[in-house]
Image (cartoon, rainbow, N blue to C red; front, top):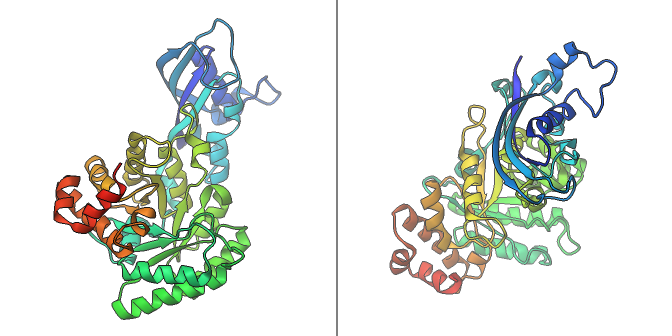
Length: 413
């Protein structure tokens, strides 16, 4: 019978083998005490198995509260556990409940993080995966051998429909590929969703008729499921190409319900990610997280960015980008969205460390606050990536391109 495998980083003051067995039991057939009906035959078929344990370093203090025992050391380890697919079939929420359920509350652990997981190839028969992914997203915008260049409407909230449409026009005239609502923008008092979609899509359609280029705009449809469907349908009616979902806010089933429609590119915003990942020994690592979103069908997913404005290290960002580009189930593509305090200056290091242009490279202030205006901001980002791919340094690229040179002067620290 096929099995699902998961890898955890754990910390425990108890015997690691015993603690790992508690993890496997709690997340399958067992509980804290033997119960009638838990036969050896049942356990053989449905109990999770501890497949491997690799001991790591030992600490004097627990990483997170709970389970502190005077005089004890705290052993870290990588533990691999597996489950028969019979336990959950192809029910994604129950799979996630198994991989990330009550095990975080178990007193045996003073640290636990889901690092990665693997599912059988048979999942391809039950999950459509991303409809557009990397290739479809870039093709939709007419982009080939460079990243998609994108921006976010700023101020995040407060602009009227007319002001937003005017800004969109200026960004389109500047040569942008992608624009999105901020995650804080839903249907504000002075910017109702329906009116905003209609006004922006008129600008996009007009430009497409003139130039042949259709800019992708990600409208934030995050809402209750029925209302998300209505907003999705309005975007289709207005000939839009993309909808944005705050995936941690609407939940896995809500995300998948919208992704399963398969007619719009789905831009997955991971706002709230820090509460899932920021502690090194609690939550979920991005390689596992992005697989969940690929199974749900998300086409584009935020990964933060090099030298970002948040807490995440460059190493972590690079790992996230590479995990999105790693093949999964024979072709479930997901486009990494690089954002958070980005401007052209980070392009050199981003390309050096990832060796890819299969990105959506997002800059808010890096475009809108460019001293020569938004058009120069877009040009500067394109120039930065041209220089990066050509092997030029930031300084060499600045000598070659005046718009990028102005970015360096404005944004470099």
